[in-house]
Length: 185
Image (cartoon, rainbow, N blue to C red; front, side, top):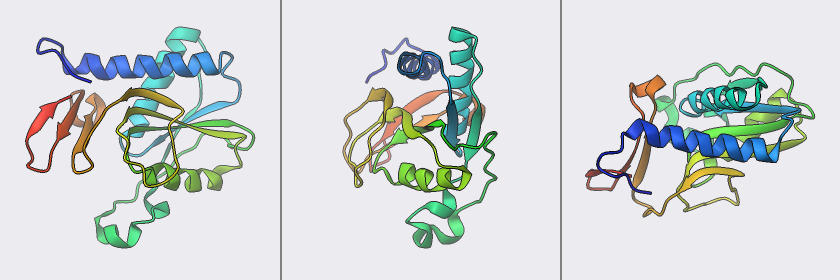
């Protein structure tokens, strides 16, 4: 995915959210039993935007919650004191619901795996789906996104950073290689 030099970065993130919302509404036209759960911290604002976009499209308000996966991670010992716990807030019991986990970037699959473990503390969903703005490949676990804004090719030593207006004050997608040179995707 590349940006033309005259394309504002915030339009790209908005376009990715539009792509995701269209895919989700196509898969779930009635949105019955659908609940969005954004993974803290970047996934939650994306989930809120998706819910707003879907309401604009369908006039249906879908519940949205936020999930801190810190304590469910398999690298908790490595991260240790570097994690900051945040409060998870799920507005409904997730038993027999279709849960759409939302995050910014799908890479190894470990965050999504941790989120699936965390979801089970809030009920037993009928199904868990995954929506991500960017799928960059390089899985270490057999996890795939159900809905993808954009798939990009990266090297495993590169870093994809999604900036959101709600968090960093601007929208954008940045690809950084190990030499820390930044290039806008």
